[in-house]
Image 1 (cartoon, rainbow, N blue to C red):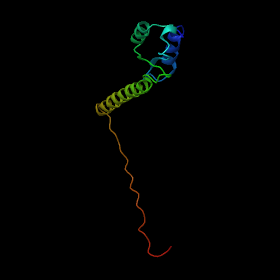
Image 2 (image 1 turned 45 degrees about the horizontal axis):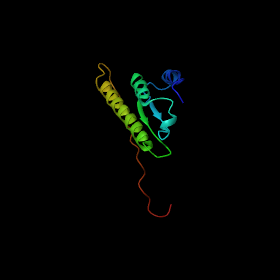
Image 3 (image 1 turned 180 degrees about the vertical axis):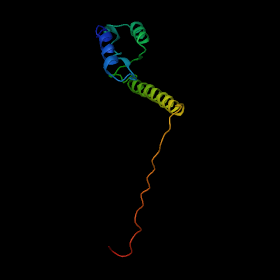
Length: 116
């Protein structure tokens, strides 16, 4: 496979997905280097151009497969953590707004003696 449609797919993702999406470019079949259609340098350049995470894997040899998932999850966690901090800061820095908090107390009846 080549990068023939990649630019269009990335644009579709950015147009229709959540703006905080994490995208990773994964080159699979790293074990078939002799059949490579896209060079590693080209993949890294494209990933850098589009701010994508990038990794080469081989499912056959089980190379970097777990690393790819771990890295993707780590990037999602980092993004979500920084987003939560930014949201909390924005909430604390709101001026002129009051926040009402409703606290409801539910009382349970005392236990009865006997069977019913």
